Image (tube, rainbow, N blue to C red; front, top):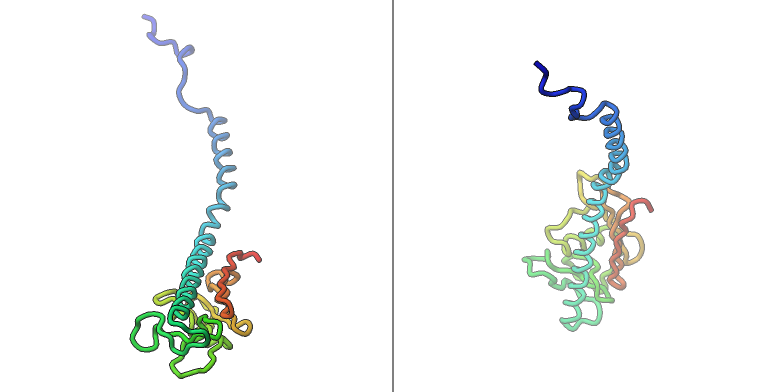
Length: 183
């Protein structure tokens, strides 16, 4: 009796060893190209966090300035209630240009940003329940480090990515986000 199938003419299913090696090499090359992009995702997420925080900070500065103007002020304002909080939590001292300068209960005729404590006091009032701030660069202590850099200007460095920061100029309300960690 003759066999029903001739093994020499039947096509074989599956891959040869060479085909598998070629596929593995191609997948390796693709992985080498794609891996750096996935590694930067964590850094990109941190940068996005700073951009969102900077946007919220800028909006709060604008809101405070608009409240100052709507209440008819044309110079410094002491303990202006920006948010309806009990006590001094929602109050800011507004400088001569109409922008937040500090948050202290005692009266000050012409409040200005002129030290680290002033920079520290503005942040939590504007960003209620926002990221933490201190003068420490330790990420276990706070999310941002406040630094007085020039008269009426502060910079808030993101402690998880210290070269990324938020700049605030209380002379004109300008908020800039430096989101290039390589600069």
